[in-house]
Length: 257
Image (cartoon, rainbow, N blue to C red):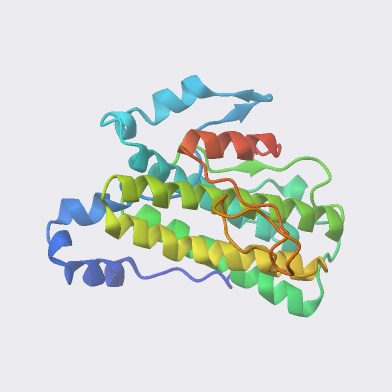
């Protein structure tokens, strides 16, 4: 990871959580992120969805048959994928990508590289917080489809799809958490999905898509129309972590180790 990546202070996070009566117990503080957001859960090896591997590696998380927990444990994997994507696009090695995926040339101008460095740092902050609170994921290294980082056009197109899956997964986590009457987790998921939406807008802006903020609603609450800013395809709201994982696998992302 580049020296530009900013690591949050786990002790400071603990101290913040202690201010809430709900998190007075150490075990509660350490485990609360097991009921949060994002994607992950399945694996693709040789193009095969590893449902059996998911079942084995996430057995403890699934013991309570808790879909919110499924989203939470999977979030670590999703954040690692995000870090690998932005690092590869910058041509910089990360612990979560493979060297052969690194961009061979400069895909972004100096201003846009700052956007991507910031996005990478944000994804890494999400990951660090999740792991500091007891979460993990059985895979750390991810490979992207051949050609993803061969050109700016290909990289940006893939990045928009990737962020759309992340957004849909976080939206699914919010819905599941709300159904479980866990307003705290729903709020945290909403805070993070806002950052992922910013990432997608920046990618669309760099790609020259007009307008880059072409979303009136995320999800399917309203149908697209001809009104400027309201013509884009709605994001899918994934019903489960597994559904979100399958969407990532459909993009050709392969867990390596």
